[in-house]
Amino acid sequence: MGEIDRYGAGRVAGIPRRLLVLTSVFVLSACLAFPIGNKNAQRQEQRVLSRKVVSDKQEPNILWAADRTRCEVDQKKFESAKVGDTVWCVWTK
Image (cartoon, rainbow, N blue to C red):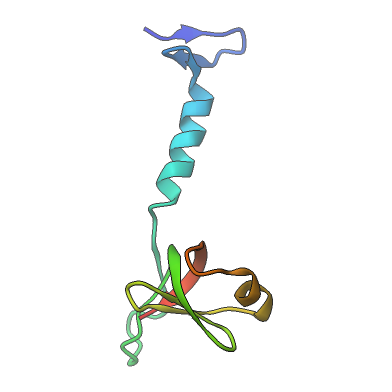
């Protein structure tokens, strides 16, 4: 059984439960992808908010991922992103 500390929070294997929950939420959020846009749109573009590794850059403001999805970013983000970096973006197929 887990222990209860003086604040009423439990511990699992000596690790505060609150820390386990926050770590789990952080790790799982990195795996999420959120579809964006109108599902009934006539354009066949798929837009997804997720983290991907930048595999290429195209002037003036396009980042490319290995799966050939692209992301249009502002100039500051374009300049700071390097090939191999993982970035949050709305990726378009």
